[in-house]
Image (cartoon, rainbow, N blue to C red; front, side):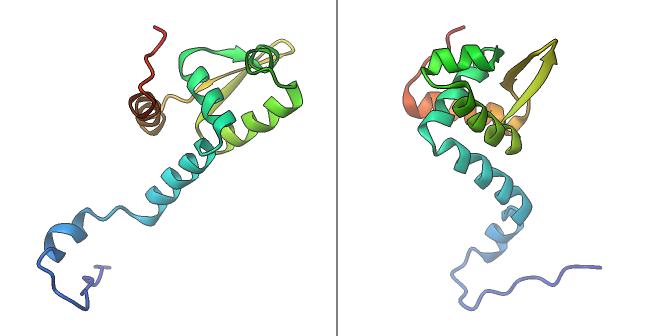
Length: 120
């Protein structure tokens, strides 16, 4: 089924140029959800750290000077939004940034906006 073209009520001369490039709602929802998670300074800090290192909850908690349950809460939210992944090794759970184009772009954006350099 062919989509009906959108007709804007006022023609300002850019309809044909702009509308074909309009992102779909699902794409924008994914980006919005990820950015919402990074709107929290603690999660942003954890995300930046996991973009560079794979680490267990206990060490992340020590690095962030927070309790393990508090860190686990933030990790659950980051993981649910697709920003990080985890793997189990024995009793330890290790986390790292997901390897997706969105995560790569967000990582670089955080570093550009914050004028932060990568540790490696």
